[in-house]
Structures are given as C-alpha cells and as structure tokens.
Image 1 (cartoon, rainbow over the protein chains, first blue to last red):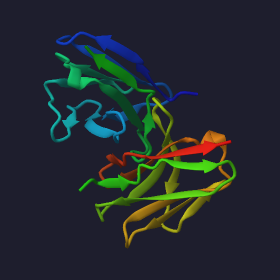
Image 2 (image 1 turned 90 degrees about the horizontal axis):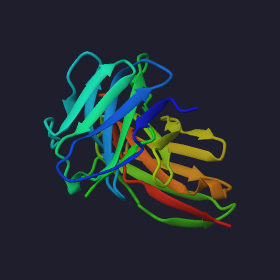
Image 3 (image 1 turned 90 degrees about the vertical axis):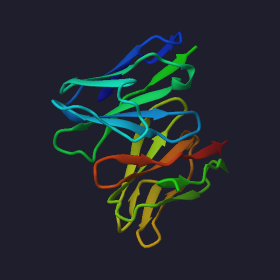
Image 4 (image 1 turned 60 degrees about the vertical axis):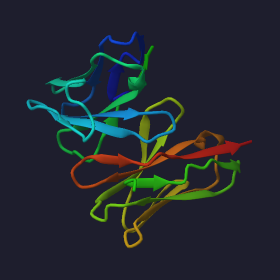
Length: 116
Length: 109
C-alpha cells in the first residue's frame, strides 16, 4: 500500500493565487522530507529539504518566499506555491525518509499543478 | 555539466529481448546509486539499489563502474510491463538524490 500520500493530485488555478500541497507519511514518522519539481521530459529537481522542527533548506535558485514549506509534524509537510504563475506549472513530488535511514526515500504520488 | 546524464532513448524492443543502457555521474564522491522506474505521469518507484560488485534482481542486473563513473541497467526477457522511464539516481552523500532525466523503454508485443 501507499507509504506517502499527496493532496491534491492535480490542481488548476488562476495566475496570482496560492496553492497548498500536502504530503503525508502514512506508515512512519518522517524526520526528513524533500520536495521535488519535474517539468515535462526533464529530471526531478530537488527544491528543498526540511527536517522536523527546523526551517527548510532551499536549493540554489529556489525562492524560499515563493515556495513556502512547513514541516508541521513528523507525518505532514506542506508546500505552498504563493502567487503562482504559468511558469510554476509542473509536477510537484514529495518524498520522505523514515527516521532510521535517510538513504531510503518514499515518494508521494505527486501533484500536477496547472496555472492559467 | 549535469550531475547525472542518461541517454533519453527511446529504446523500442520486442518482448523477450534484452535491453541495456547506462548513465554517467559527475561527482566522484557519490556514494549510493539507484535505478528508479517512473511510469507516465506517476511518481518514481525504486527498482533497485546498485552495489559496487554489481547486483541482480530477477531479470534486472545493475552494474557500477566507479572508475569511469557510470552505472548500467540490463533487462533480460523484456515484458510489456517493463515499458517505462528508468531514472538513474545518485546520492552524493548528503542524503540528497540527483536524478537523471530518464531513459524511456518501450516493449512491444
């Protein structure tokens, strides 16, 4: 069964609105969570890493004020795309590592965002 | 230079054929290596880890060449269900994964 869930699975929004994506761990407590973005026919690109109880670490080129990450608990992380623009349209995927192994990552099913 | 580079393919093979492809990575300090499978519009799923001595999992064989910094995946006796994009993934040692753009394999009846 699924280890990580994401909600919503797809969202269409107007330019300028904010979109929140939830990532939940179903089977374990995740001390570390990762957010990726994938454009069509491209590789997954890591956006940020968050550890429960501390601020997220953003990869170079990713605006922390635009992509707000909240590692609310050991089972929930949220990514908010603020003031979304069409170029933010992408496939957003979270992954989580169980506390005993950061090498093992379980991916959520992804959220497809389309900004009109 | 990209951290992980793969031949995008596509590799179109008949059922029962053997297909193999490689990827190269740029960071010689990379410590862990994986092959993931991604179906169209879905999340990646771990296919297998790649060990220094090479390893096999059923019809799938993975090899690692640290000196040349490449990883290979070989699929024997291809099934229709093997059609997917195969992602080469490298862990640089800081628990962050670097993904290749994927190699597309299509197995035809």
